[in-house]
Length: 493
Ligand SMILES: Cc1cc2nc3c(=O)[nH]c(=O)nc-3n(C[C@H](O)[C@H](O)[C@H](O)COP(=O)(O)OP(=O)(O)OC[C@H]3O[C@@H](n4cnc5c(N)ncnc54)[C@H](O)[C@@H]3O)c2cc1C
Ligand code: SF4
Image 1 (spheres, rainbow, N blue to C red):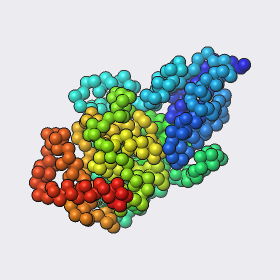
Image 2: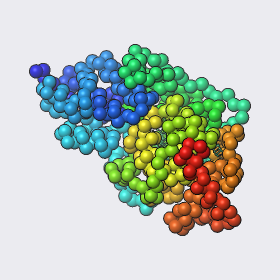
Image 3: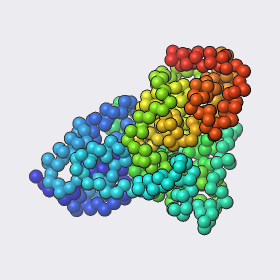
Image 4: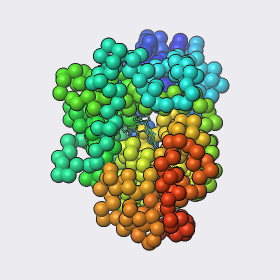
């Protein structure tokens, strides 16, 4: 039996040699272990981009660490505990260490195995620091957290004032898609033997949309900073059928599995900003996503606890409609396009996720856990700590308002303003009743009506309820809403 001092277990979402347990690793005394768990693979209900990305990135990382001089054991096993136990039975190990896991489930499993944890520094905000902030708040408003982050980390600050004189350029960052616009190019990543091997095993053909190695992720970061950052802000909420990525960074998959660390993304963006020709609205808009939303969502995941994902405060029981599995099952141009894009690449940006998919699920009363499962199965960057608060809290308001002070609901008018989907759609975003009424518009008013007792006294929804009280056609609206829901069920909407 051979002997090593430390066995460093590397989860597939912590693939960075510079952080956590790997930061102090030494090829002389440490052996690295990655476990490809059949149980975990089976939990991926689709053989799609996401599973390919997950497996191929881990295998590339194992190869990279071998090239760095480490002994790397890449164990295929029925489950993570079985894999760790099998390796422990083969080699003498003084201790098994791991970076503190990123999800409740993995933390529980590894704690039971007696694995020793090293602090998780994949985020800029330690969990205790977030709790300290959260415990001092009446409501968990992201904007307050974000401002505190800017000050604490000294980012985009002029002394004690925000650079550019404002904390927030959201008002400038809400332009609809431009006409006759030349979109900057996005990368196609080279597909290598590991990508092909994983593809053959799972029956999926990689297209090169997503990198599966650190060098590919770095290339993506450079491409974003060079070609997209300057235009990120103003168009960050726009949706168009002409371009799938707009000026978004496409960095979330890499950040979420460790191929990129948040601090190196921040550094690259701020270094580019320092050259002086990037509008502050763009740099601030991006920084807000990264040190604001991303850190806030991670903090909230831990702060709100393991049961939070089961919340269903609005009592939504609707089944997931077929359109989520097959975009041909709807004539709604927005939903059809977005579902098609998700199937094709495992990604759409935050507004289609929030204002098309989640908005629709919320308005139609779809069960939050059914929708969450679909989102987790479908998105390349899905990981529990980020998907759960975004879906349960932000998207579906299933947590009774713990995260958001009001539900993110809107009718077709918002989609019509911010996209080109409505042109050529069978439905009319301005109509709420009748055969041509836009389902979003109908269900939006019906949602307000159905949930009047919960939301009418919410001062942030006063105007919406005032609008509802002035509607003269509430009966016709209700009749159309019922029709819409049954058409949705039959796959004819
Ligand atoms: C319902 C819903 C579900 C979501 N699910 C996920 C998910 O599973 N995984 C995921 O990484 N993001 C999720 N997001 C957040 C956001 O949509 C994606 O991070 C973003 O679209 C990824 O594309 P990008 O890298 O080009 O982001 P950019 O628009 O370029 O933003 C830069 C970075 O900011 C971070 N970020 C931005 N918004 C958020 C947010 N709300 N929460 C956390 N991080 C954020 C991401 O790391 C992102 O890479 C979700 C949002 C919603 C509304
Ligand atoms: S009219 Fe309604 S359903 Fe059609 S694309 Fe616009 S918002 Fe979507």
